[in-house]
Length: 163
Image (cartoon, rainbow, N blue to C red):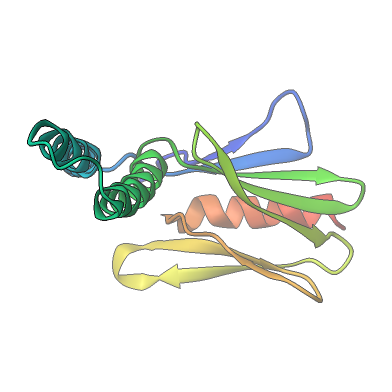
């Protein structure tokens, strides 16, 4: 059973992406609720202290900042599990990697194509695997589980590109 998670760019013969399968809806709803509570809770707390006449205290701001960071982290997880894509481009004999969360991008890395080594880390109980790419200085492990068949096709495609 192939899920077609690996997408080859038809406009550029030197790029491909690996897409994350979206998480189940109840998990995404849970993350949205955690994000909402992480932002609304401290704001309601600040509003309550201001209304009661106590004013805004340092603890209120600290509480808001900590829960704001939690909300941001949960947003990253939500976006990755909904729209996450690992993008790879071959430019000037280098393989460029970037994690795309839809609203922002992260984890930019660059590997030398001349010394590129492509492997597949198999996860036997699920009949899937992860792409493992390395050169002399850097190792890149994909975080997306993909069918072994798709990974084998991708490995062959990459071998043709740097042969």
